[in-house]
Image 1 (cartoon, rainbow, N blue to C red):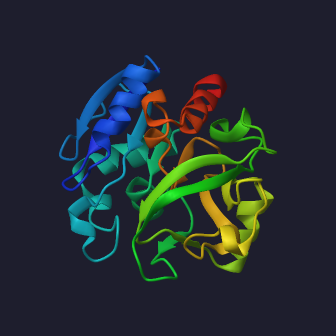
Image 2 (image 1 turned 180 degrees about the vertical axis):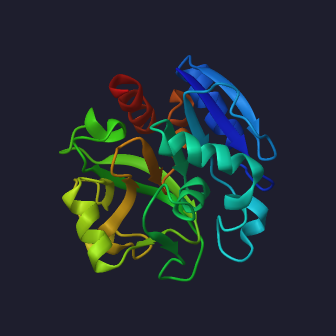
Image 3 (image 1 turned 45 degrees about the vertical axis):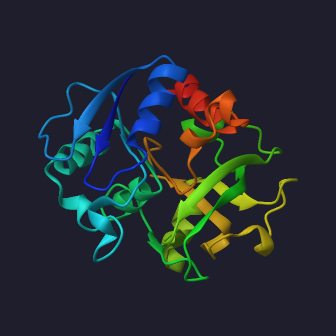
Length: 228
């Protein structure tokens, strides 16, 4: 599997992602720049976290128009794999690739802490191999992570098994108290209808190295590799 990690002005998790994919998981990784007009033959594109273009206007709204995004969108629409983490998820929701939107946290504050995730979709590669009875500890760091979708869109997302993660407590219970940002139905990540584009607010690449004392995030990447 050949991954491509895109760097936008303001990205700050690109090196974390490259290290996780290349060093910890032993995959081939290409560095992609936001002004590139090709994907260098990668199979899987990753949009990392950060603050692309300073999060001006709306998080992800400017990055969506970077030259490389035309190729990323085309790649996803023809069935190629794309993943957006945090700011990358925000960018994908500005494109036709993912539904819904990421609004300001209901606290109106930036939140940086560990949370717990419950895997939901059993058909999406990113969560298919995970234990739905286990709570996975993954860090978040965002100010605009509150997932929202209108009722008809939300129904379609559930009908198509597109919810990949929900915020939960450490025992796996999905509760209001475990919801860090007010996300609709505690939704922390979704996929598209064809299950080749994934977006999530928590950072699995920050929980993949044994030196950090938590490798729950590595399991998420291993699920992707096992199922595509």
